[in-house]
Image 1 (cartoon, chains in turn brown, cyan):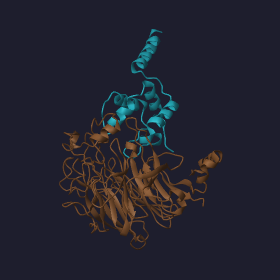
Image 2: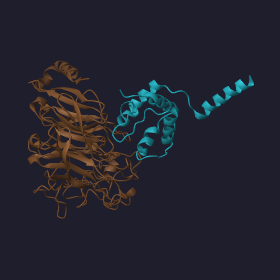
Image 3: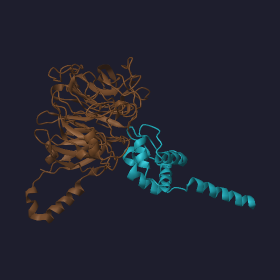
Image 4: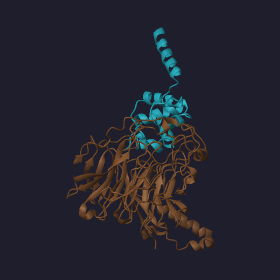
Length: 436
Length: 106
């Protein structure tokens, strides 16, 4: 089924005629016609995609693995998780649990020559002596560099380039408290061909502000996993860290006009955030107990407090356990905080190309939808116009798709269409056609 | 004859004691889409870390929802389910259970 905005645009035109001269200045505005068409259906929690110029799409399914959809629609299963069937090969260390599994995928900027993909996944290969409790180091989120075979049907080489991002091994006394919580997991190639890896706090209070642990961080590394030479984290921090103090970053992209990185991350019963990243900056999330006026917290994690299991005014929680704590001098203030609500912002992608008309350059942001304690569920894709300094917004328009889903993954394709993965199991291609 | 009356009485007593009547699957479908769809996905197929809830017996779904409604915890997402189940009436639960028993995502 295709979904088109033609009807609503016709309605808008009719309204404009009625209003007459008061909207004369709106004449000539280039509002694109959008159309959403499913390219794949019946998938198992598709998480992320990367699309090539010829229309070939690589995509991940959280508990299954990496596959390729050729431009003729044929699907080839390339690299599976442990226990999966039908894939050319399976990584016996790769597993899924709760929110964790195979997540982000990005193609090397020289993919046509080297056939390299970068894939984030959970793995038990690097647990070592850790992972016996939730209160110790547990390395379980990795980034793999996969070199595909000549026909791209299998993996010719796998090199794990980041092996020490922390993972939550056991359940804890929190909402969404199962193992595998808060992995971040989006990977993108940024300016200069460097790889950006978005992380989460894995329900471990000390993670976001820790100088050594990579949980709750955004990394900027080269394609071998080494730190970018210009990363500027505080003294004593791991040199791969670009920014720290994050909760759960599932969206990251780079503004076309200046290359500036922006993240989208979930809030804790309040304050989903878009943030303009500053090299070495602090996003201000610090869910440790016994700091900032807080006492002990369940399982040493204050992230949902106070009264974490009960309905409470989001503003009260935001004051007690802020997403962006202003006590930090190196705080990166949020560009936008979803009016203080948490509805589950996930992936984000800047809309590129003149075909997007007046929406060109806006940040498309997927919202999964979480209705807790009176908050509207809010499943949608927002198109956010961000100010040039990145510190605020000019306005937001909901993408008029005509349907609501759990929008998990968004990425632009080379033909300037937007690909969208939903938790329900579809991947859509959203095209925009400018009217001028 | 006395045996027949006894059997009817027993059946009536069981229905009254459990508070259960046959659910209305259509009403359950409507309620599911208002309250459950956003997390558990279409037709209860499950989505992301939220489990599949369709294909279970009416008794199973009823038991779980009543337990959540009473505040019992079993599983990491219990707080969410307790909050969602709290306003459900017996009739709502029966309707949801009837709908989810045969719900299928095509």
